Length: 227
Image (tube, rainbow, N blue to C red):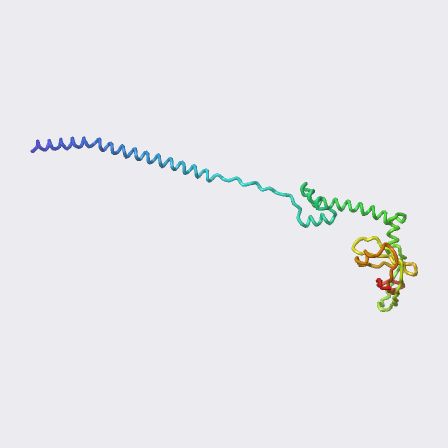
């Protein structure tokens, strides 16, 4: 029995030895497959992270460009002091501050006005003589006293055919200068449609009212009437 047992053990050992290479081969195959799997995962991961890095690269935004432009109220102020649309566009392109342009324009206007006033108030100048002849400046100086009684005055209305001259148009009103019978002048406001029909001078029939109050005679109304 003992001998048979020994033979049995030897046979089992040989069988075990024969099976050992097969087990080793299986382990080796598994290790190779696992290694390949790890390499594949690493490669895929590497590509994934590279792609993610590319995606996450910050996009450079376009730089903000500031354009110099006048505010609407500045444009209105520039036009008010005499700048034209082309001049405003030019100075805007040059980025010239609006306030500086306004101050320059006002300074120039002050110089020009002073020159005009100097001529106007020079009694020997042509400008003064025109002002004297075509406005109330040429009339006699009057003085009115406040009597305190605003119903105590006398009034008279007259109708006359008088000579007239057109006053050179300025500002927002049109006038003609009418020579009254006593040699004084009265200035009558005209409607634009009638103004254009009149010659520079001629005759016109007018009706006017004179009030005497406080030691002065004042025309309170004057208008053209049919002959």
